Length: 239
Ligand code: SF4
Image (tube, rainbow, N blue to C red):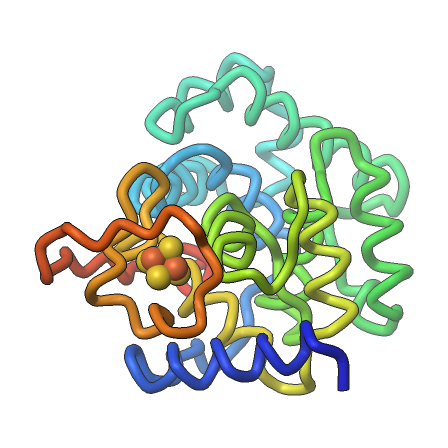
């Protein structure tokens, strides 16, 4: 077993002990919903991206209708999620491309494809990166992959599971070494820990369950021993 895999198992056990196994909805969300939800979630918090997602769903009966709207109209409804121009253009581009290619807005066909084929297809759409495609794999198709966002990238580098400069490199190493069946709990609990304890500027190391195994040289041992719960996970609530 690789060293990375051993570390992932160790970290996962400690986080499950702290947070438990995160719940999943009974039915996985539709892949198109998930892809759009993930685009909306970039560089903002889950609550605001969820509001933007619900707004689009409330204003339009279907994604086909959204595809026919001018970018500025889409932008006006998703403003709360930030980066409105960029996100509305990615959404419009994705929906129009899939409509042109398949004659309908559906990603049902990817359910029969391998992880590699799905990544290749989804990242072929402008504005869809590896993390977004991985979220579709994990949340909609329940494949055993760990999408790497800013929290996952920061924490696994601090802990010492990987030593990389970019989320995409982190993603490649993590997913090469992901033990079967734990990707969702590892991903979700790590994000929660990154928000609540291992924050970017001031990690709250004294209360961290990984303190003894973490290799971060700049641990912050002087912070107060409490934290604010931040456990709303957008991508487990899409649909
Ligand atoms: S010990 Fe500190 S730096 Fe290491 S994972 Fe925990 S909070 Fe982050």
